[in-house]
Image (cartoon, rainbow, N blue to C red; front, side):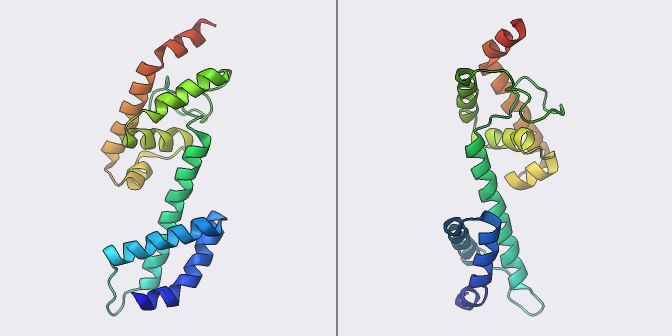
Length: 170
């Protein structure tokens, strides 16, 4: 493992720096890669490609980090809790015309969702990902991803019903 740090560390750090645009984030992610390599090392036998494995782990960790940053930065502004899970709408469709107090309440209710539901709803509505990709990101089955989106949106509808009724009356 120590040989990998010296041999692959600098190029992985550059790769992660290009992906994240931030040297500190790249260094944090690289540390996660090394932890993954210690906890569950790749096959180091003949014919194995440790470098490719490290790049895959690093790239996935960087993509996850970037998705988490987008998630917190955009604060779920694009979710339409009144839409059915299968509807195709632009991510910001549910917030058009809402005042900032209402937006804050929607974000607050989104933050109260259980973690898997919140992440699944975000990946579906804000990132526009399909269910198999959501399942991969959440490390679950496609059915579980679909259920998490469905129940997350259902909870949002219930907790924000008064907002949506006011909007309809306008």
